Image (cartoon, rainbow over all chains, first blue to last red; front, side, top):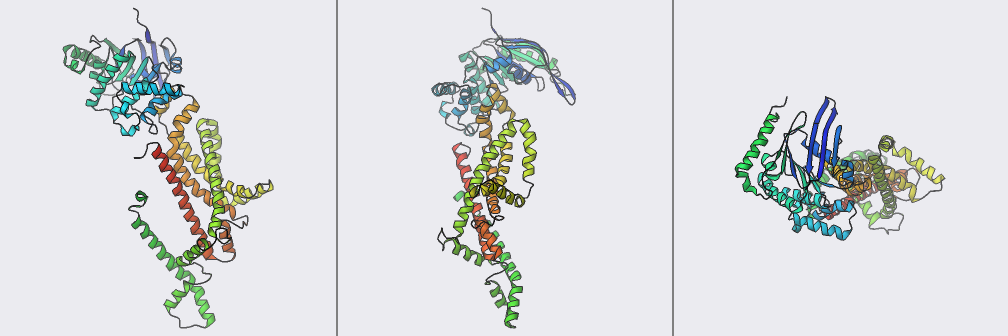
Length: 263
Length: 293
């Protein structure tokens, strides 16, 4: 069976014109994401991984090259609501309850009331927050808030989930727990996920493909296809296979000058 | 209520005692020249100081009435008068209050509409904003009679011209705070609306307006006090016969300082009441939307 390309990027570059001259945020990016993949973009800050995610989401326009999302331009993919986006911070609206927050995109997209209710409950159940549906955001912990924001991104059932360092602000214990839950959710829903992170264990643990990026200019340095089976749990992190991939990611980062001091 | 007042009783009474002391000292100083004249005319020569002090407190037309005279006048012109009486402060306050509230409602709506126009259209931002700011630099005392004369020439009389002056003063703080409020959503929130392909109206109704609610109340708190000032000023230049402004004007015609002061204090009590009213609405709104424990 040939795999369907969900994202197809060809020779893409993005230059920001700033007062200090041009900044090459992305240069000559070439890569594909197939249906059902879990792809992590990893690299130091300033390597353009978030910018690349924003280009896929049509929140940023590339300077040159081509990009297709589900075979369409990113703008059309966005207007046809092909993807859900999870931001760095949960950004739940404080004046709405948790279910009101999950319902927001559904209201905007014109789902009727009973359909909204059904989808809100289904997705809250998926992230184990059904008991909290009538709470306000400030009554939830940071980890729960981010889970609610994942449920919100999934509420309208997009095929593609774009996640920008969603667990970056959480402590390691909560992050481990959410990583397990996310993997479980990915297996259940069979979504395609693009996940931005700067944690090596997180990238290796979650992904089917790890894209190592290097800074100045933002480039893809290495693409690692993970041999780990989709059915994994946190204890896999002690296995030699896992450590071998982590080692390769770290070497990639080093060779890409990610650990150099900024000049 | 307990939360509002707990712990503030001692500071408030300290300030009150301080104000009353200065007021009484001022009463003695300002009223004694006239009192000495009276003594001279009557040929009273060996008056004691304590008699002088006592007499400055009970003049019929003092330069500065002492607090108790004002309080007695307040009591007499509110509790001891029928509300329908032309000499009842409650009657006059009712007249002023109705144009205050009408002007405030129009002003708040105008402020919200202007703010939406400014935030959504760059042209409006560039063209309206300078004029909105200029409008507030013109002394209201100069423009109030013109508004009333022009409107009465157009056949608009009574409540509405006065209300327009309240509108003129109260739309400004609402506009300024609403512009800030409508622009308060963060980039991440606006990006999120974009990923959902929300249109301008949806973003306004579901993100910008709810985000601006705390700002709106801050603006309305200033706006309602300004509306009251506007209504009083609207009564001054027209020789109005009723309203708190008219009451102050009559007081100054006849040298009735007690009457002016009591109208003044009654007006500030109403202002405090109006601001508190906005605050109560604010608290219950925030509570309803879960932003208050």
